[in-house]
Image (cartoon, rainbow, N blue to C red; front, side, top):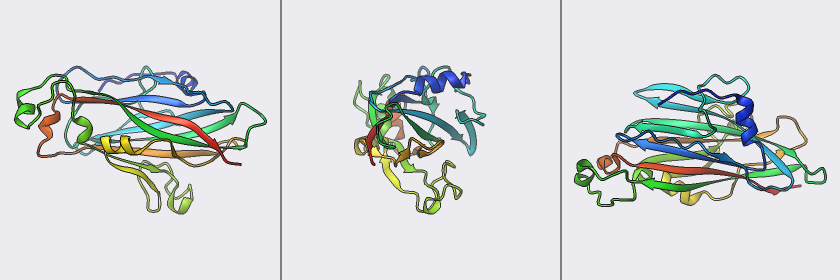
Length: 245
């Protein structure tokens, strides 16, 4: 991993707009560092969405705060906006990324409320060469990697216990009663999540927000060598969704 720094206003400025698509990359074991750091906006006629996030990475029981773009954040941030930019990920490693969305109306006649949505799209599944251990584990594909089949992912809404923010909302831990949006391998979750509504934001109220966490773990599977040099890239696709007033 490589630490970088970024001016927070630049980060939020680049993410501010009508929606967000932040590319995410993970690479396993040998090979060149994998960095996917692109962020862009989507069309949404009547609202602006702003995002803040925190990201952790755990190896051998030691957790590091990698990114924290919240006002009091203290993590080390990349030179371009993006999430989960890791290479040399090893079996047993895990991490979280939690992000909060706020909204402003760009059209004063628009509804007071907006319901952001989340989708996950796999954009690249690279094999990065076929090694002897991969072949011994049964890997026969020379161009398509399998890492997405070995990453276990859970995505949930950060509502706090019984919907009370003070009771564990946005704390990087799934509390009881916090609803799971999707769970399974990264491949399964990407296929399952498409325009999933995250909740409702009142764009007329300061700091009204919705929050969601993605937790991933690189499972220590008996056939893990199948993914030894693989990498996977995916996009968190956040849209304005529909209004609800």
